[in-house]
Amino acid sequence: MTCAVELRRRGARVCVVTADEPARTTSWLAAAVWYPVGIGGSERALTFAQESFDVFADQAERGVPGVRMIGTRMLHRRPLPADPWWSTAVPGFATEDADDPFTGTWRFSVPMVEVPTYLPWLHAQALELGVEVRNTKLASLAELTDHARVVVNATGLASRTLCGDTTVQPVRGQVIRASNPGLAVSVRDEHNPGGHTYVHPRRHDVIIGGTFEPGKTDTTPDPGTAKALWARATELVPELRRARVLEHHAGLRPARVDGPRVELDRHLIPGRTVVHNYGHGGAGITLSWGSARATADLIAQASSCATV
Ligand SMILES: Cc1cc2nc3c(=O)[nH]c(=O)nc-3n(C[C@H](O)[C@H](O)[C@H](O)COP(=O)(O)OP(=O)(O)OC[C@H]3O[C@@H](n4cnc5c(N)ncnc54)[C@H](O)[C@@H]3O)c2cc1C
View (cartoon, rainbow, N blue to C red):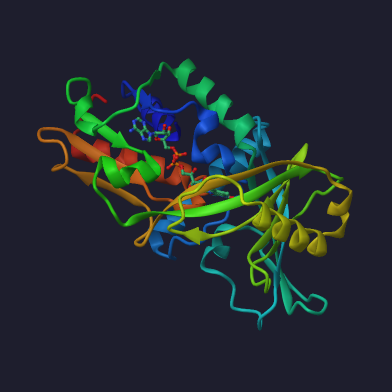
């Protein structure tokens, strides 16, 4: 949907073809905090992350529904590493001491996107700009041949079958949604001996995560995992003991060994240009605006008279 808005703003005629309602996409489940991890530290990844950070920070300032900045405390248990590659994109990134058992803290403020509020807003923006949306499940991208000269493939994990890319793999993530007992700061404890732990407060609830289970495809929440997550989270943030568990979810991050694939493909559909934009793993929201711009740039380069 981000690509559709970006392309329409640049003057293309755009039709989004989607198999699922927004609430049934992976994006709906995301926490979704700006945090470019698990995608390598390339120049390109940094550009996507930086551009998206700037767009979301501006949206937060303009009061776009569902977007705001959130303070984060990232706790370390190992000797404090050098500042991460993405810290240059984050104004005010700072390092602080921490109490035992932690060795130090990274403090930073980043955009947080409440997808169930933001995605309907983005959808409405697209419609207002004149983007057409069709609900259809495609068996093949070639079904679009008669309708468009350029196809943007933003199908996430479905790219495994739709373009035969077996390097895109599910990384299962289970989370708990709980009521917010008054929390305002995100806390991350990635080297917790029990497993990766984060607590992301939103306006009316808190997302508690999360697992990273490569290759697993079952999206039914596991009760044992939920119990362990809750125990780790309440130890990390004791105020959570006053919260009520609202829901359990599990989703599949579309991860790719080489990071997101944002590139031109002239071979997949004979006579048509395909621009891929998938494989963003656990950072699809974090990279969304940057990769949408790169997608639109590729289309502009491929054909100065492209009609999408
Ligand atoms: C638990 C969890 C926590 C996360 N937390 C964060 C976070 O904090 N920050 C962050 O940046 N990211 C986070 N992510 C990752 C993020 O959710 C994904 O990277 C992102 O949602 C991927 O977006 P996408 O648009 O590529 O894929 P999707 O959201 O899966 O969308 C794919 C689209 O393609 C359509 N489609 C698929 N197949 C077909 C077909 N055959 N025909 C027609 N349409 C089709 C679908 O209907 C859908 O509209 C998290 C993910 C999980 C699971």
